[in-house]
Length: 618
Image (spheres, rainbow, N blue to C red):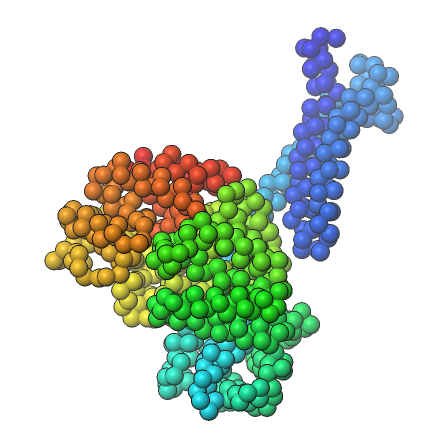
């Protein structure tokens, strides 16, 4: 039998049709098991086993189709059936129907798989923007009533832990720390605070500590009428600290009509350690980290890291401090060595990887665990695992019925966005601004998302929403300047700078970099050049705005050289990912000039067409 006759015989015996039907059905079976196995709690080996069995069955199905025929008398060997008596044509028509049916089911499954999670996210998002829920609360900073007023770090830490515990409950809307702590030390009416934060209830309290002895008071207040729904005083010692904070969180949740099963009760305890001394070191570190971020006290971040290291030494299984210990080193990679000249960029990258590895091995929260691994991959020299981890993140969030992925690990946003998961990114950003309405970072990220989905109009509308909550803010104004310049809105920028950009307006290097880009956009080439020189003379390296400004000035070769330099630095692709997604998902450089970043994008199967390209890139 020659090849042509053999192929004709394969067609006659419906081998090709059986193969197509089996392939579609097998693929559908694999996808269904891969999707439902995590939700049903199947062991991890179940889905791979199903895949192996389906693959083994494929050649068996083809052989059976060749060797046997389904006749009115039953299954017979094909060689025993005369061609004149064969019913393969009729069987082929039935197979066509089977193929169409299975293919239709597969298409339906694809649509459900593609849009089900996004629909869940949208459902949650719709709830977020609805009227103020009775199951919403802000935990205000507990007052330090200690005799020497030297336990502020302790009272703040206790407040945060209660807040974090309550945030583990999906039914409860809890205002984030950044917004709640804006009211620290301010004697304002509870109803005014609640209205500003968009909550129905407020928790306030105090801490008095003398040695190991504690007195903690807490009360839950309904904001609209000031009625005390619950209050309690705890006289205890530091050894029972965790029991006190968990009991407070449990009483608040119960009072707000949230049913607590055993799983939810376990969620209420989120600090990750039962070592009081380690926990106190962690609280001291968090207070110093806050001084760095909120008050720009640079030495504070290194003092904070001493406490985080101490906490991890006291409890080698305490993973939470590692998530914050990496922050200083991320700032070094992003901002240059302005924080500490003695720490090289290579050392900073390796420390980030070490911290994330420690966190991954020790944190209990499954989403934080995946977040630590995603961040580790982002700063590594290989992004192959990024799609796998992204899938795990989505499945875990769906299983845990949560919407926010970035708790304790801000770099997850970069991964989510660069991977094109904009439904997930948008829901998380919306969650942040709803629960953290006084956070500049939250609003900036949400505005960036709105630029991606709704363009410049959506971005500026969001900026105005942010100002209605926070008032005018210089950093927010500069962020808007950047997006106007990227959209080439020269006339609007000239209206905002009727006298042009003042090169001496600010001593902050980051603002100088933005001013350089804006100056180049509105034609102040000399000012832009002067500002670039100022930045180059500092310890901070030129980054995104250096590239943008050089392109605007027509210094293309210098811009390309700077892209190549940044790409070759430790963590270069991660930093490019940060800037691409922060500024509206815009690809502001040519990937050919950044071979390391291009390689990472290929490894992670990142779709380049999702990015908006600047004119000079093409």
